[in-house]
Length: 547
Image 1 (tube, one colour):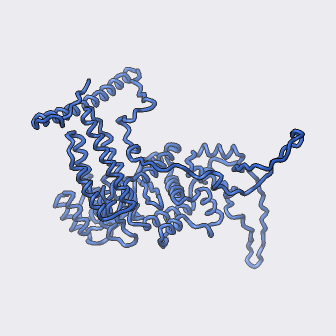
Image 2: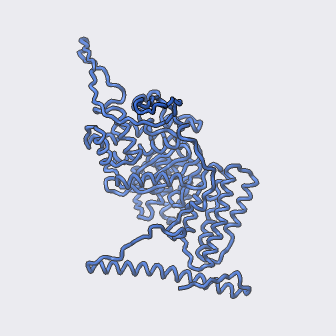
Image 3: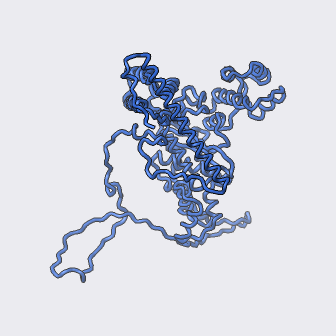
């Protein structure tokens, strides 16, 4: 059906203009309902066909969707800014470690050939060779103690393999996301005699040595500044659905797989331990704002000790002793309020001041200020699919104003001033106060206006990014790992995934080669700085003592 291209702004009579605006919004509503009904009818037809033993309509997607496809919610094109291209020539960054001379066979030269100098060719050579080494270890006997002293193997040699093999397995399995079967096949192809179980053990962290390094990265990273960003994605552990939380800032990225993705899970991660629970003025105010029954609040005040930390078991014991049984709808808000209050009251680790995330409710009220991602906010607009040409034009015009303001915010970050801060605050108000007449767009703009403080957090803290893309990309690293290996088969496997993805992602942020870092820490740990120490050095702080 051809939708008329009506522009209400061209209608002089106010009453008629309002009627046209309402009719256009009715058209949008009916068009959206019609599209939804078409999808539902097709699904029912497919189900009927399946019950009759036939196949439904195949879901064949076009090879290249159009740029304005409704399913494309990326804002990359709008955010892209032109940057000067160019990089140094490869050979200028290479250090020559070996030189060989190439000569011409004199028998192939013409009689009148004259030597005309030389010409350099820079190449990179990779050696992959398997050597079977017999270490002859001295053994000394001590009669006075009736003991033997055996000469140790060189550093890093264990389990019948050299440190390079251990490093290669970790770097390929966790750094390059090579699946375990493919990794085993590669090692055997190059000539190693190695079993499936050996590769599986190499990919784990049985002694917890690497896990300690990852924990130190997380603890040090949280202490490097006043803000962190976070995101989450799913991970199946031994067939059970769990959640991988990703936390980081400019210096580090850490991964944490937990059973859930609730506020209490997020508190546990930024606290660095399983949360405690505390009843105080903050938690009571939080519960009152959640409109819990007054009788329940009174019973909680009577049953729980004031200003005292409780473990989960102790909290449950207090509730049981008082005969309090929380409903399914009350368990989460009560636990959240008490856990957040305990986190804010503790003094063992610095309490985060700023948290950057998407607008998921689990991130609210965890820190003093919550900064929101502009890219996530725009995705709600990108999901709008207006059918009326006038509404399409209104959405496009608003998008231009939206991204112009976004670029102004980027410029402010480079040179923040009080005058520009005030101008941008007024510009935001002007952006969200404009009414377009397109009901769905205006509703979305109101929601953006309600997030004013979170979206404009960068005005007070210019070093906070305007978007959460870094954590989204970090979460995507887990998704790619999940695509290749499906999911860890044990809790130890999940811990290994978290550990080595933390090491790999942090090494990348610091410009440290993951393979060489692992090998150096295996062979010369005494003289190789940990990633936590490098994070602290970059941020100009001391490594927390607990690390």
